[in-house]
Amino acid sequence: MFEAVEYVEARDRPGEPVAERHLGEFSELAAACDTARQALGEFLTTGSSDYAWWIVRQRGARMASWIADSRSQKEFVLDLSSGQLVETG
Image (cartoon, rainbow, N blue to C red; front, side, top):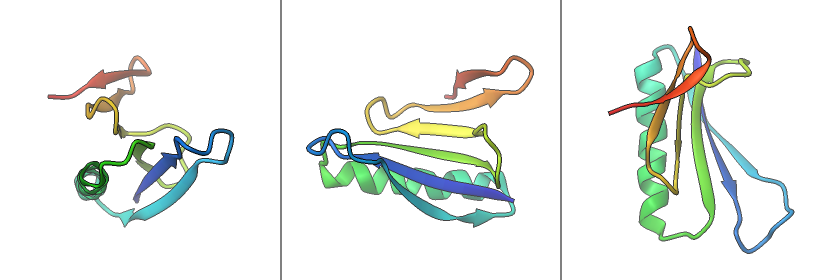
């Protein structure tokens, strides 16, 4: 099982905890990534100046399989052999 999670750091409230929103659990990595990409797209249409990022990981894992953020709009995957993030596309 994979989980998709959104995190938002409010720009106008420094020092406050980062908001976390669980986007769902999925049996397939691709479905979890698609859901996170959709949340990224929706966030970008709001015009918010907050910083947000999205991750997909196996349920309960400490390392993400997929990551994207609102500032760069780039996507990354984790290379398990090296432990490094690799930009996709």
